[in-house]
Length: 357
Image 1 (tube, one colour):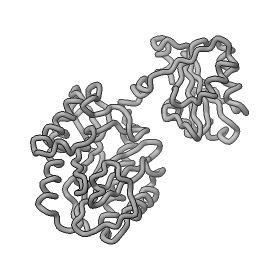
Image 2 (spheres, helix red, strand yellow):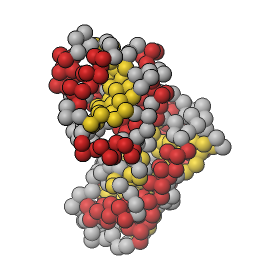
Image 3 (cartoon, helix red, strand yellow):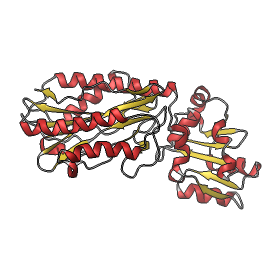
Image 4 (cartoon, one colour):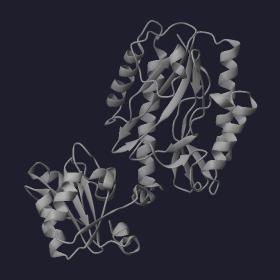
């Protein structure tokens, strides 16, 4: 709270307003305040912070937040307008993507000469891009729960089962392991569907000899994990082994290059060049990775058009892949924390071609 309040001058705003609802949830509101309720408005000035919510969250707001004045109100809009008027705020920074047009329109109608200033999403994300030790531990716990679940599911028979049923097993084990739920829609893509980078689990039945891409993650205390393994049902063919080795080599070369100060574009180039030299360059269809934290996809973005360099405290994925239409695919994804002594792999599953039955 104090960190963002001290930066208002350089943003050329008098205050910041964050809005969260069941329809438009603000991750940044939770990050800055600790409040997990679905309906809240937060007003931050250089010297104070106010949280507006309704009676359902009175006790929760007191338990989850510190350093905020809590207002239990009937109308967050009316109450926010009164606070803004009383403080003479003229330039109000907002998360444009988390405020409805109606809320913004009514706010400016109630507060004369109020100018709403959309703040770049990247601004608040810059506060979140380097994880604290406590944040890293939460992500690591989420990764451990997810890896354990995947390990248990892959011990069972998969042949003859629907992809969706395998995904459901994973998600049940997330909950049993202590997770809040899934971090994203679980991907179990087998056979030709393994060529779909985001092939959500379907009613397709898993068959012998198929490659299976399993991409999964869960949430623990507000933080996400993300990991992908590739399996072979039975014995792999020469071509399947070759594709896996190509992705594995690119994955390892990228991991070996992880260090503070390396550009995100360079890391992507290293993996992409490795796959290209093996003759599969046109089948690598996405960026190398992305940041993970309170959101599953956040800065930094490791891609040919990504910006910036790796910094200590970042958590991100390394996930090269090859996707061949009407054949199948391979993706290997590790979740990485860049610490003071180098990278630490938070995800736990092996990146070998895992044989399942």
